[in-house]
Image 1 (cartoon, rainbow, N blue to C red):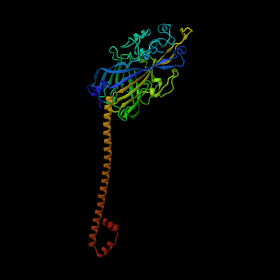
Image 2: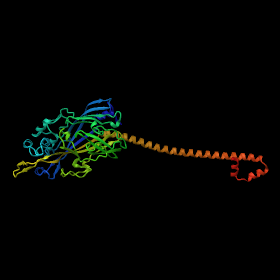
Image 3: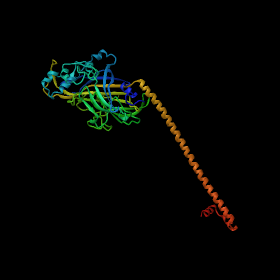
Image 4: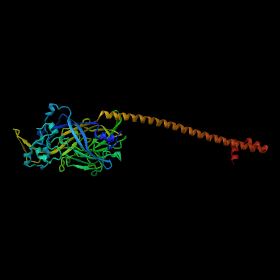
Length: 481
């Protein structure tokens, strides 16, 4: 199996053109009682998921640059989203009350009790109930968007959209990594040395952390049993590391053993070692991925806040229905090469913003109440991404795995046979040594008897008669003495 990462190697060819199919589904949260939330910001929030918007995600590595005697490689990532099949009319025209991201970003510039100018520019409603859901994903422009457009960083600033900003438009290169190749130590393969993004001013490198983390596209061999109970991955979409934690080893996909890892949202700011003893957080602050000055505005969580800790913070107050089968993330690795066979990655993006209380009269006219806004956490959407190794590559793994398994069975059989033969040889040797000892004892007794007989023949008749009547043991003692 080719696991080395160096120029022109087989491992390099698979790394450049990963033999996988990646799909991503977006499910937006429609706040069905948004008017109640606006008039009474502390009310329980009722949400309804949209049908999934399905995309095929193609990833390409560009600008390859080897350095430090090929022990490091730098590259950029291009991503292209394409709709899977044709969206039906109902999906294309779906609307609801979704978080208005441009307004949210604009609202962060004002105090809890916002100035009237804020409402003149951005309106009263924290929810966007005019834009189609598909446009929120693929890109849209609005009056409020014009207020934040000048502050946007990098390519793709003509519109705002969840995938428009991070997809390949106008030759954008998006994410830029420098990683270790593992040429000196395979366990370092894929470890991040440096990272920066064109989409935000955020950048980082390994020296800022007390632990190693990987790029999520390159993995070291794990071995069996695994040598890595936790794999920390830098998630470029959210500008922070997350953790994959070993769960179990089991036969799957035609292989005798694959390692199952599950996602754990570990906060390195509260558990700086990012090891298996760290407790999982319910959500992680990812605001710095949007702006250097932004804090406590965007949170990453598992879908529907599924977590090992079942209690939710009181300021969520949302009718979530967490379900392990639908909302847990799992990755299955082939142990020898560290190749992901299948991955199901599921995360949710949430906004924390001020909800400015309004009054609505009988004519549906609204006005804002002269009071501080109430901060609420509002779910935006969740992502369900599936990564599947293609059949041809999986077949090669299965074939090699079967050969290795046959070889191991032969070795185990040979080893057992060798042990049995060795045991029998040991028994034969012990028996041989016992026989040699027995013969030597008998030979010594015979020699002593002959010597005594010779002495007896030279003695007087009375002495000979006495010797003949003595027990053998006495005769022996006399001779020895």
